[in-house]
Image 1 (cartoon, each protein chain N blue to C red):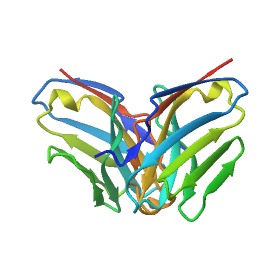
Image 2: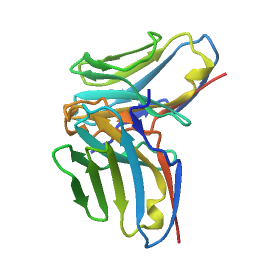
Image 3: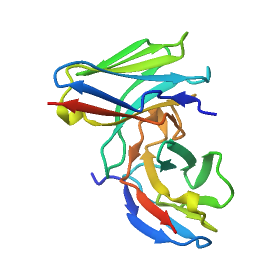
Length: 113
Length: 113
């Protein structure tokens, strides 16, 4: 069974640009969550999508947005990039978000210059 | 406001000895707790979980203890192996049916041969 796939794995952007990250969940998983990991901050929850609907949202500004497609694939977008957006962005999937056992991808490492 | 705290950024133990990783939380609404392990350049992987109705859960070399009155949980690894060297994240959620987890900052465990 293929794991969670995130693309791209690495990318470099400049301030003010926007970026779109993609996540393909494990087949059969309908819940997709996004997390931001920065040094010293652990993993911070961005949002969760289930059946194409945003089910939960973390405390991030409106520049961070996401969506989920009918095949459960998800994208997140960050507009007007700031230096502080440099981070590892992790996507996780689960069947329903149940039991809390999330399956994470390897992440997309974003560097903002 | 850090609702889940791992106060020890790092821990070093000798192979074969016990590793004890600690985690404190402040939100009494948390009902489900998990530990994840993360190797460099990989996404976190689920290790073990515990519901608030229990005070102990064991899986092989890994045991998680929960002290609800102290809002404290710990992960015991016995015996520790060099392959256990990784970053360990504690996470909590008010319900098991969600992709929204609140993570601690992580503890880097080094197991020396």
